Amino acid sequence: MKKINAVFIFISLMVMTTNIMNAQNPKEFRQPYALGEKNDAFSKYFIGQSYLSVVSFNKALNVPMFNVTFEPSCRNNWHKHAGGQMLVATAGVGYFQKRGEPARRLYPGDVVEIEPNVEHWHGAAPDSWFAHIAIECNPQVHGGTTWLEPVEDEYYLKVCKQAKDRFEKENSVLSNRQKAIVSMGNYTAQGNLYMLKQALENALEDGMTVNEVKEFLVQAYAYCGFPRSLRAITTLDELLKERKQKGIKDNYGKEVSNIEDKRDKYLRGAEILEKLSGVSKDSPKASYAVLAPTIDTFLKEHLFCDIFERDILSYKDRELFTVSMLAALGGVEPMAMGHIAICLHIGITPEQLSALLNITETNVGKHYADPIREVLRTLTK
Image 1 (cartoon, helix red, strand yellow):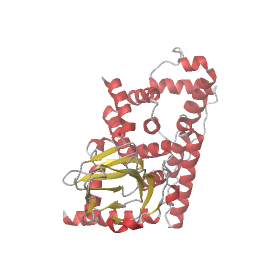
Image 2 (image 1 turned 90 degrees about the vertical axis):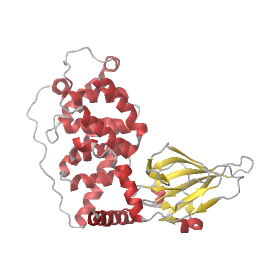
Image 3 (image 1 turned 90 degrees about the horizontal axis):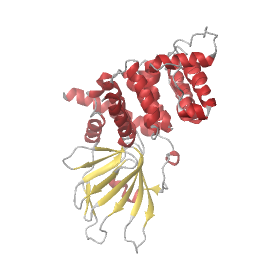
Image 4 (image 1 turned 60 degrees about the vertical axis):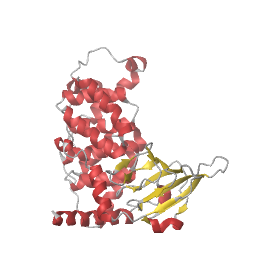
């Protein structure tokens, strides 16, 4: 067991080092508040580089607030606040842990309430930048912050892995390929190119061909727009060039077969949708199609014919990718319901869809996964 742990720690440390070396310019990390300057005054209490900017220091309000930004793997020491503290996660993925409790994975919108004199630490995930607003509570209380011992690498990696892998058993119903599809869909939809690049590399390392990856990213335009699709394809292009420079020969795989069917594309698309959904192509049109017939034409001709007719990916692969994008977009539950119904019709199980949402929760947070979990529950009652 110690040997396995040692190997895991060694590999994780190599990944941490690579992530930091390849990290985006901190000014390219998108967040709602100013990055600020390097947090040199408190650097002895941090492992890795952090940045600090003042959000509010109005003495009349007496609620000091700071924006703290962490590069991947950066975290502060164990510490406690005499007056307590609140954290509001605003960008990236991070971790928080109270002494004696499991680490908690943090996403934008998460709020952490830390009572006075509770020992804890917080910082970025090993593979992601992170930012939060730190609010000093009860600043009139004497004692301030008491800094304690560092959160050493081995411990940090262990508790982060435990939090990230909490769905590991349930997610075993998906293959590594399917897990890679979900992560690509999540990060493409959100435009998180930093994390998408890692997901694309994982997909290639797991044996997915370049042409298969390209096909997923092309399909993305129909669900999250050309800008997201084009940025994702550009990210893949950059990754392939980097891998080629390192001497890695990626497998491009087979090309899409020529389409022999010359019938009307609207009809072909309608037949494919009928096969996917189990709903007759002659059924009454949805209200949006009645109001705007052009969008119905685009759906049938461009999406279900031009894209889904291409044989390089299976229908199951395409629908897993679609639901992963819709989940990460948020606010499109009616469309997610339609595609989850398709998934169930073509043989993707409720357990596999639940695992897809577990991965979505791990990647982008409960705020995105939970509404789609409710859709899944509704469809499987």
